[in-house]
Image (cartoon, rainbow, N blue to C red; front, side, top):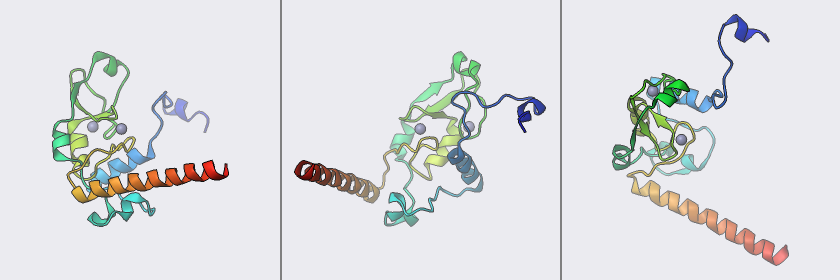
Length: 158
Ligand SMILES: [Zn+2]
Ligand SMILES: [Zn+2]
């Protein structure tokens, strides 16, 4: 088993190229046309409405995502689109998310129509869903309150 890579005449994964199970899932989901669905009872699944799924990214935000041109350097480093694993060609256009991850427009646009986060790191984009945005604000406030209580608690008993 140690000579798997020799047998298959290919390189082991290099730096920054770890297998990413979330992405693998993302690709499967895109293929089957199903949006991401967490099985755990997490924040998203508590969101009332939309079957517990986060809403799509804001149309306006998606339309205004910066488009970058793939450089010679990126091609030399075999930079790939994380969704389809296709290597970029020099001069090709890619959409860049606020988290600085970039993707083929044809790969990321259908994804962002289903959900509002980067398939690579789950960075959330704003949505057009007022209810969801309000829910996010409330969640942030609840977290802040928790922290305040903790701070208060440790200042009293710490
Ligand atoms: Zn792609
Ligand atoms: Zn990202």
